Length: 218
Image 1 (spheres, rainbow, N blue to C red):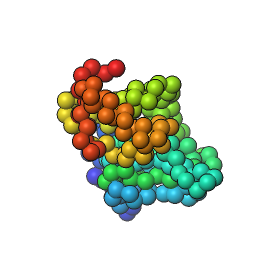
Image 2 (cartoon, one colour):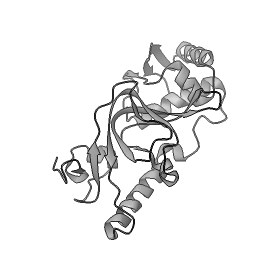
Image 3 (cartoon, helix red, strand yellow):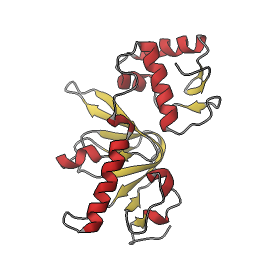
Image 4 (spheres, rainbow, N blue to C red):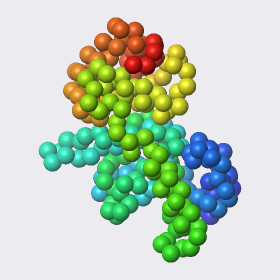
């Protein structure tokens, strides 16, 4: 990687730029600073912190919003190549807490000041297009489905977003049953029963958090 400053790097020279951006970036188009690695459970930022824009390089972040009763609700996931914090920029502070659901690495994007000329406009256009393409901009594929199909759709959606190409290969879900339930609007016990039903129907195999997809997608 070729450093742009002592703390920032030109993303064009990073070997992960295609994974993050889906294309080879032209030089000097995006600069970012690699943050210290996050262990599982570590927080990238808290709800209410000053706004900042990040991109996930590896791992998985879970997004939580504090409720009036003090509990937290899972409102999203961010996987490699997905932006974190863009929704918060207009408010000047983070709208949720971002926590590593698995060991993760992220980069903080450098945004030029408003009025910085053509470079600023090109970067904003790139971010706008990327934001519009993020999976959670569209309706969740499990919306309106019964519990079992909701859990099945979530696991299928996760495998696609994580670029897990081979359906027969096992992978580890980064979320607990409680977090999956919070995300899907289900009780943890309902998630456990749904996974058991899907396993009995041989649509997937489950051992702890390790899942193997089996049979055609439904």
